[in-house]
Image 1 (cartoon, rainbow, N blue to C red):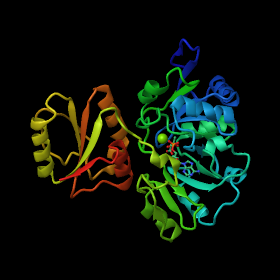
Image 2 (image 1 turned 45 degrees about the horizontal axis):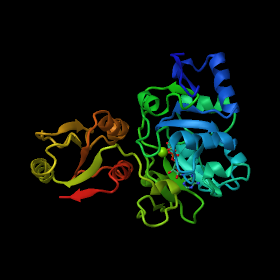
Image 3 (image 1 turned 90 degrees about the vertical axis):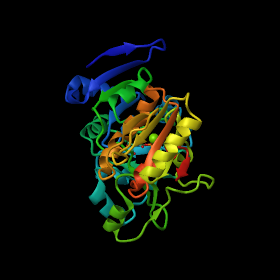
Image 4 (image 1 turned 180 degrees about the vertical axis):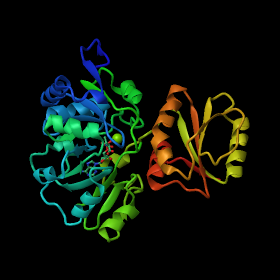
Amino acid sequence: MIKKKEDERNMKTTLYHASELDSPLIKAHIHEVIASGGLVVFPTETVYGIGANALDSVAVKRIYHAKGRPSDNPLILHLDHVERLKEHVKTIPEIAYPLMKAFWPGPLTMIFEKKDHIPMDVTGGLNTVAIRIPSHPVALKVIEIASVPICAPSANLSGKPSSTEFKHVLEDFMDKVDIIIDGGQTDLGLESTVLDLTTSVPMILRPGMVTQEMIEKVIHIPIIDASEVALKETPKSPGMKYKHYAPMGEVTLLRGTVEAIEGYLNRIKKEQIESRSSAILAPKEFDKRLIGYYQFELGSVFYPDAIAKQLYSMLRLMDELSIQTIFIVLIKEHPLNKAIMNRLLKAANHQIVDL
Ligand code: TXA
Ligand code: MG
């Protein structure tokens, strides 16, 4: 155990390290916290999750409260074994089987018709439920210790970038949850792909590192990517309508050639934003140093996995440095993958300048 702390509200957060989870005392503590309706933050292979007993409505409400999350935005049920799926869903469509075989445990969430015992608080009032089996050993261990399904949204205050490092979780949840487990930096850095299997044609509601192409290759039928639904339409996935992943500063995406973006940034620095602290987040291939800006490298466009892994840390760093204006460079001839673009567009509230 690293340390224990109490605050004025007498909510104690106990911190554990992932390597300590074999201790019978710590296991008993985790079990007891979940059984009594408490909250445990743990790492998954995608991002950290803030977990509670999915069958306990009061515990589920605590998650919404801790995150400041709108109650119509449903949560993902995390299971530790494929065998458990049938306990919680009405039907398992045929195509789910090859998908489970190919991608579970792992960063694919699938939506099914829920059985009645899953509280509406988990599903935001929907008759469907999102389910995934994470591959991170700590996540699996927490679910096993809890011996109930764990609903776990990303462990970030609503609207902020998801937590991919232990320190992000501390910033957002110290003394607001019962236990936080330190598992270091998460591997993938972006949340799971969400795939709806309750529609006649399967639909991607949130792109992730399991891509449309990877899914189609497994099920041999074309699917629909519904993740870029215009914000004015009623989205299928309630989470799609909220501003997300956003630092406090104003984010603008700039798309064009390296030279066009360089010209634009030099021009506006002179004209408009002399007094504001401004930063540029750009891939390695933007090989320019510009005067008057903090400049940060996102990684190479040829290694999207590395960009995905660092992205939320970079966005959170902007807040640490109190950056007011943030430009993210998209080099036209090297488009980024859908999952990364989806998060960037949301961080920028869809503000994109084509140059
Ligand atoms: O990688 C992940 O999925 C992480 C880790 C912790 O597992 N979890 C995560 O949860 O990102 P959350 O709550 O931040 O995002 C869940 C997304 C939301 O966009 C939500 O609207 C959608 O899944 N969702 C959940 N249940 C749904 C349902 N029944 N129908 C449609 N969308 C659903
Ligand atoms: Mg989230």
